[in-house]
Length: 341
Ligand code: 5GP
Ligand code: MN
Image (tube, rainbow, N blue to C red):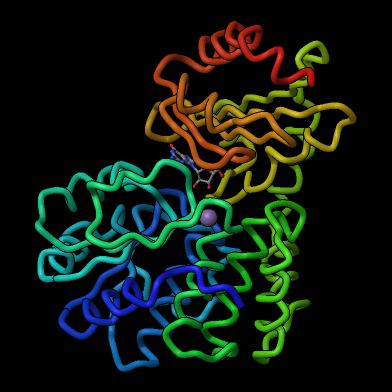
């Protein structure tokens, strides 16, 4: 198995773990399967080594992840601000999993920036803000932060197998970030998945808990979403927008639209799919997906204050939903050559 990180780096990490007394970890806003999977695998691993840590997420995370061992102890900053701030103030080491810059934590990040706490990054997104972190474990072509955590644990222990309470969140993170093993999969990733399968986990059960536990409202919202898909064949693009009123009509819960943005990519010849939603906070949230060479990271970075990966990125817009969609359509000619390849 390839060594992803140098022995020196692993030693630095072990040294930090041995010399810190209060450890916390955080992940990005609107945590997804890899965000929750990576922090829980890492905190469950540390627990096994006798090191306690507190996991804090900026806002709520989807119900379909709540079966994972350790979710019951996750603190949500949005709901328990004072408690989280007290814990962070007394922390001397902070693990930052599955995001590339502190601003991805929004309000939680603003608070963290007021503290002198030492931060270790474990991530796989493009464009790490290096000045934010004391130690960085980041490899961009890797499928998921969970896959990176597997490498770190394996380099520390020298063993290919882990306990089920570590293997389950790792498997969940890899599975969800690859769209159930459809993209960003390397032969090495499949070797890791094979190792995880030997750790006493049930692949079928995990798949069913994550992908077959949705509400009827979510299913009806998906039908509505599919009906609203707009196709621009001249740009090989599809987009959909949902207003707050539309989301409320389907009793939207966090996670309900997870994966929707991928649906238009199954239309023949479509290479770019963009999903616009009115967030509770008032801005427009963009989810962008592409196939092949087209980089949604470039598009989002340039025009929508976001980024992520070449084929999966997020972004924001601070004008109305209609204005955002019009603006999006107005920039498409600039990308035409990259879309029609
Ligand atoms: P999603 O569309 O699911 O919100 O995000 C797709 C991917 O892009 C995820 O890996 C997510 O972490 C990342 N992402 C989402 N929003 C942003 C953003 O504003 N900045 C950056 N750098 N990455 C983002
Ligand atoms: Mn991820």
